[in-house]
Structure formats: C-alpha cells, structure tokens
Length: 246
Image 1 (cartoon, rainbow, N blue to C red):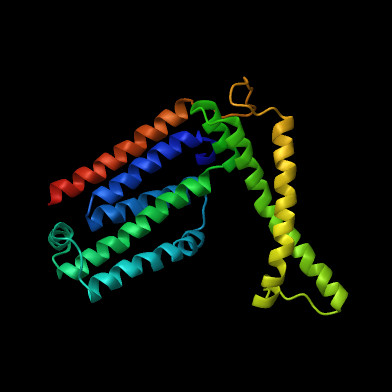
Image 2: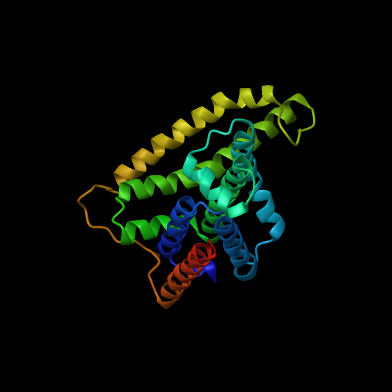
C-alpha cells in the first residue's frame, strides 16, 4: 500500500515531520515521531520490528553521543536546557541529552520510513516528471544505482577467482589485506563503467533543451491526497497535544 504512493507525496510528509522534530524540543513529541512511522511500517508495510530495531542501531549510537556529551560536558544552550527540564522534570543536562537522543532516533525512523517504502527508480522518475529534474542528472542517478550492486558482484567474482587460483577456501568476510588488494581492480572497473555511461548518455542525446518522454513515471491520485492529509493531521494532533500539556 505505502509503496504504491507517489514518492513525492511521501517525501513532502517526511520532510515536514523532520522539520517538526527539529523545531519541537520535547521528548514526548520525539517519541510520537518514532512510534507513528514505526507502527505505520509494521501495520501497512509488513516490516518486521526486528528489522526496524536493527536499522535504528546507527542512529541510537549517534544519539548516544548527544546524551553522553550532555551528561559529561553540559554545553547545551539555555533554551534547550529550560525546555527539556520543563518536559522531563529532571536534571537539565540529563533532560536535554534524552531529548537529543530521541530526536536522533526520530529523524532516523522517518528516514527509514521513506527508504523502505520508496523505489529509487520511481523516485527519480517522479523527480524528472514533476519537478523538472534534468534528464542528464536522472540518467546519471540510474547509472549510479546500477553501478553499486555491480561493484559488489564484481568484487565477489574477483574473490572467487583468486580463491580458485590459490586453492584455498573463500572466506565469508574478507580481511583487511584482501580488501586493499581489491581497491585498484574495482577502481578500474568503475572507470570503464563510467566511460561507457558517458558514451551512452551522448548517444541518447540527453541535452538540456531536447524534449523527452518519461516512461513509467508515477502520477498523483486520491491515495496521495489521503496520505498527505492524514500525515499532516497526525502531526498537528501530536504538536497540539504537546503544546496543551505544557
């Protein structure tokens, strides 16, 4: 259901939620910004909660840096300390650190929501169709999306060839010396691929002035209007609840 929506509708809602999570310095709002996207993913996108927990680990580590800085150095602004202290009724340093920790998780969860429900190819096509993204940039993004998995496959092929030539078993996780030895061959592969991409772009005539037809570009429909309305309505309710409780 969520993947069928226009990527630009989801981008608009996610950007507004991100801005709100930055502007509203209240831990209760940050919790709402975490649980609303998480519940939406679990219910409508059938995403496993364990997957969400695993994806939140980098953001939790990043937020833990804010928490430890708040407790050890106590260098927050007076406004942040006053707002966090009023919200949690705890020590100012701990309150501000918890709020910043939750803000990192909230921004991460909103970003994960957009990433898990949006096809990159449809997103680029929507940008080209509705926002005027130049075809040259759009084609470059498509080429980059195809290059990343091809680099991983090429690296695996190189490791297999070396293991067969040396007669040893292929390690599941390459060591640091093996990774360093793959840098130059993969760089040469990327350069060759970039040259072919440049030739293909010239052959397709991706000039800035030429008219172009964009195939399979997503359009807006009633589902997008419902999604945007519900997203803004829930955001308004969360903000109003926080303001009224102060």
